[in-house]
Length: 86
Image (cartoon, rainbow, N blue to C red; front, side, top):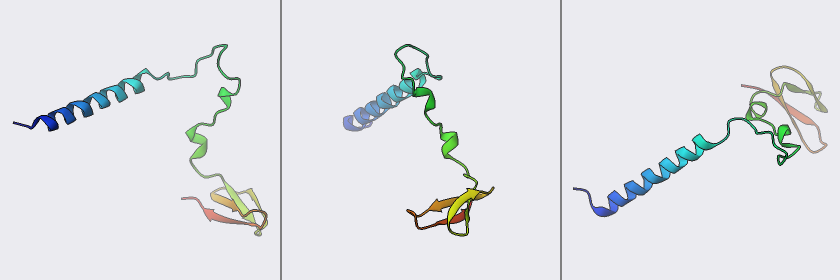
């Protein structure tokens, strides 16, 4: 037989898990269009744009230019450095 403290801890953990699952299931899947929504809410970037390779390379250590397969990092007006995306 389990002690009461372990049983109560398990009950609380299960209750927290159920509440978390219900909040995830109750979240809206698509943005709702209402007169009370912000005009800028459609401009929020999605995680798709944050992931992946930006396809920018370094042009002679001066500035970033478009080039597939590279990620360019700029240094506060002191040039740049490019690394290949993996």
